[in-house]
Image (cartoon, rainbow, N blue to C red; front, side, top):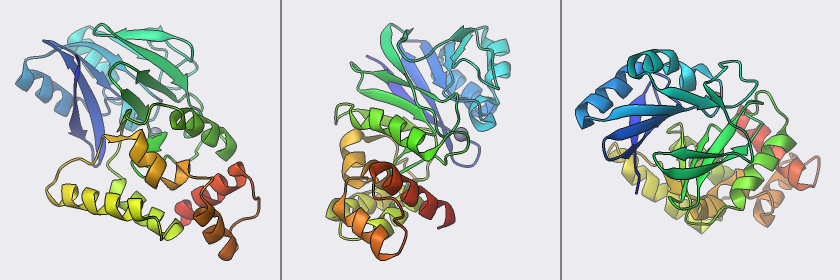
Length: 254
Ligand SMILES: [Zn+2]
């Protein structure tokens, strides 16, 4: 029912354009020019803006686009980039061009971070919480809080498409191979993503089933990840939170 396509912005951001007929929403616009160009090229009228979190590369174009289009901006409460026209939080359902999206609170990368999920479109707009093969840095929350947010995504249907906000996939998957070198699904997925990037194609969206099979930040119950961490002296706390924290700290310094 909805058409979802990426607008490339800044160095490696994707602003997602959601279209139904001639109406559109954008998710996390960090830069106005590429959005205005896409709207004009496709003859789309901007009907609304969704924000996942306050970082400037996700909100830098909100004021300009709102002025240009006269549309509403929806986003989380207590957001340093707010207040927004409509505040949404977990338990809320928003209608985007006639399609229901439920809001999930996913703190960790920032404290205000939310995600938008549609079960009928099999679509998740997850900002900088989950990436293809990786996850966002934990800037404002704690690693256990971030793992709790990612656990919400683990429970979504496997066909759910992951519309994240950055093209970080190859670096993420190459790191993932250090963490889990014998994961054959991961090697195959990395090969497929390398082929897409060689053709300058986005690797986003992936789907939850790919992430469950390959993403070390969703695989805290993988015996191989646990063994890799233990063998390299990185496993101080042998719990799901401890494993997630150790992988996150390893990636931070990789
Ligand atoms: Zn961010």
